[in-house]
Length: 170
Image (tube, one colour):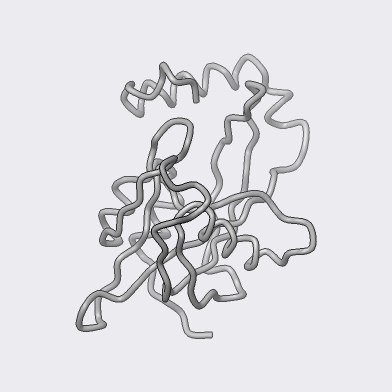
């Protein structure tokens, strides 16, 4: 998303993105979806019954997202998700090896292209937080309720995943 789109309402941004895609359908449908791996980071609030979910801002547009990134050579999907959580938010914890869900979105690439992505989500029960991490100063981080996390993110499938999230054992 371009910097000038950052202040526009989501509906304006979406229509701009759809117009861009309409001009270049071959770029959208030429290949398979690209895979990414995300970390659904959560912690238990005092009392241990309710959870909070970590949301971060993207570096380019400043919109609310969850930590995610591209596959990493030599790393399993859940390991890549854990690395993204550490680099983007300075959090580590107990990660579930099986995805807890997935969502799709359209990724704006630096070269101006837009590619469809499927993000497999891995739950991370956060046990450690660090104030000093790779992308510190490039993102905002907030711990919020599942409902608030769902309200903040843009992707419909991710909203559903967040609002319905219940931590899974093993």
